[in-house]
Length: 527
Image 1 (cartoon, rainbow, N blue to C red):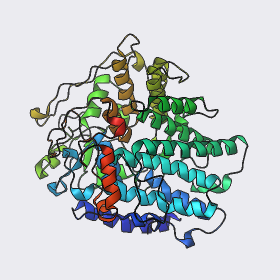
Image 2: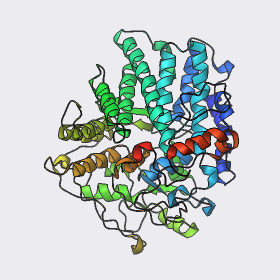
Image 3: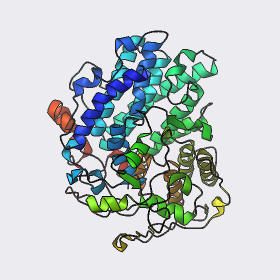
Image 4: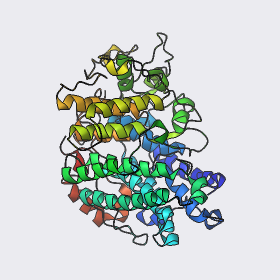
């Protein structure tokens, strides 16, 4: 699809999401999975490999949202907020907000109703064009699995293995079955790509459609293996044997997982500028600021990444000051917190999908469990920190020897928001420390390395309790969510109750509880 045509299609989608933000809601339908109006048209799919290539390109937003409204509603307001990377400060008419744990009903389905069509419009057409064979189809499988993990992280059970492209009502997979199916699809794709890469197969006709690695398919193998490792860690507390098997397969693979800063996955797609920049700098004076969690840890650590992540505030006292998450905002408080620190994100920056440093932190956690990760927990942790510094183009210095601790938080405008640091974990690795302390240490650095992408951190918090963050200020949740544990999931979309009622009710029974935000999804139940 040409960028011009893609932008034209997304103008329509932007209007839909904007209506949702004004409380009208924007609900999709399951039958639109294979008739999404925002996918490529036949005219977009002319020329050598243009058909499958354009369809592949249409799937990339499912991995990280580049369109401004989608980015705000999904990656910022859910992932980055619940991951403690940013703090939203806009009121949005105070009709219920993610940041105060009471999102309005019309927002429940945003992740589902936006991302499912982004996956399946292209996927079904690629499947049909290729008859389920070839590299384009396997590439689509990698993207499908990566995006499905994100959707499942929000809701728990989702439709996956029974989606055909023709059925209007589709049964959900239990999470255990979902992960087994995703591993199967991902393994097949890894074998296909690895065979092509190692065999020197010419894949140049697909290069122009690759918005992540520019046609370097060796890096796609590393990405897929790292995704496999991430998925293994997700389920490590509930399916330990399968998790260990898949993690060790990923690490021992001949191409393996991400290892250098050049392996990190970034998407170049946006609708004119980086959407984090747009929302923080151009919308109503900026609708989010950096989270107080980030400034507490990085300031306390004297972390070299602090200026790379956080701009100076506009406060009279200056300094890099984040905002406590979950403050019930009004016009006056929004104006006040607008003077706090914005993220150091440029208009032209690409969007982080997966950092290479994450692979090391995943391996370090695996090593703590006794898995064969080709290194000790300490060595892998230290390599992860080093690669993160390289990714952010800062000098590490003696950081790995530092025994500094996260700092207390001081709100220069309201002492009632002050908070004592919630963690004492240091950058320096301590092999004599309890396993839980080193697990916290690893997950703190993994969180820092993934800035501003918070999806992985929200998952880590739910399955381990780490990293520790300040409790939100105003918890307006009515389901029973506590500030200690935070939001556990989002309720299923209203669109699914409207069009797929029997199957969504069956999915609720898979949760083992009510369809609300207090229920732990399968892999989170050990926390």
